Image (cartoon, rainbow, N blue to C red; front, side, top):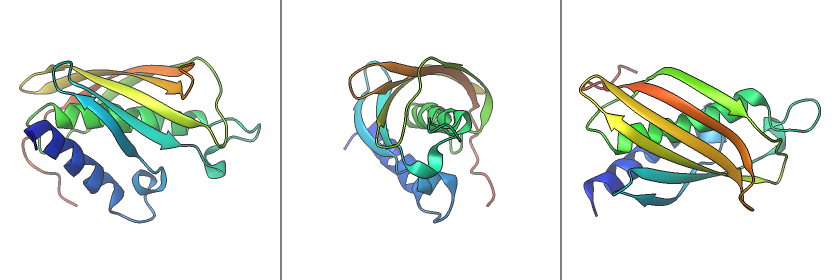
Length: 146
């Protein structure tokens, strides 16, 4: 198994282990990755608890899913021990609802000594874009204290 595949598996295991946390509750699944383009695709099934009062996915949940995907790409394609979010910007394009699956393609565009730059696109299974984002992550060499 390649180093990037090991790091992707480690990222998902670390994020989903703490029962009751938002990371564990969103049911993240690695669908594919491409080490040449430093891309990974994560799939998130959308559940009722993630909806806003009008039945669409809550904007904060979309931000969380995009952040998790971009953070995953930042971690997977760097040597960081921990990649906390520095900043992110989200563009909401289309609504999604309970029962939909979001497929998020996240790309690590740059991994420097201090900062990692990423971007992501969230799509429905049929390819319709729901949201796009860009983000910056710290390239921390020491693991955060729990």
